[in-house]
Length: 267
Image (tube, rainbow, N blue to C red; front, side):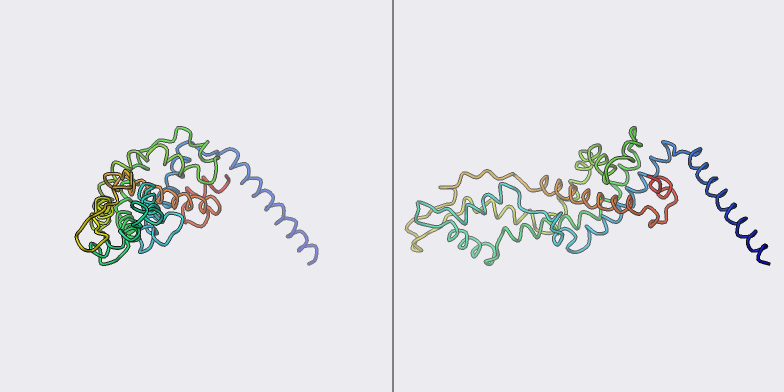
């Protein structure tokens, strides 16, 4: 009986060795094709995009994510800083003029904070419309250097996608962002911010004279925030897609996709 068990163990070990050898032989003789690499990369991007849009379009998807949160455009941020530090004629602080303005026009609520919130809410709303636009770009793109992308950095596919499609995506996505900014009130808030520059403030309260921020501020604001918000919204989505790509590369067997397992599993 002992000899039989010993013989059975030796036989099983031999069979195991043969199976492993066959598997290695199969891998060596069945290399990834360019078509498979492209399919795997597109599948990974599609999964990354779906997860990213779901995250970005949720309440607080942009606003509560400090990495992709849309902050004030540089020119607007510069205006906010000057309001806190400068004065008219060295006598009337711009902060006092601003407080009077928002009390009159915005129930005392800070326009800059409202603008940040409204821009991010707009991006969250528009993100729901990004999936078919981005998905179409993924389906139509061709990876001439697919193997280089596969063997590249942890976000190589996302970076390549960004470089080759961001301009077209901007054109397609911009109307959706503008519509969302209108709906959240971001564009109206921005108009109110710009109007502050021409606000006539009476420091005496007696109607004797008025001063205006434009008397001391040489600030040129963009005509709208549509392009800025669109660019930042797209950048935020690409960041999230890149994070998803990292996860796929780290564990390609967690996604239930045979092509992702084949393409990324031995990479």
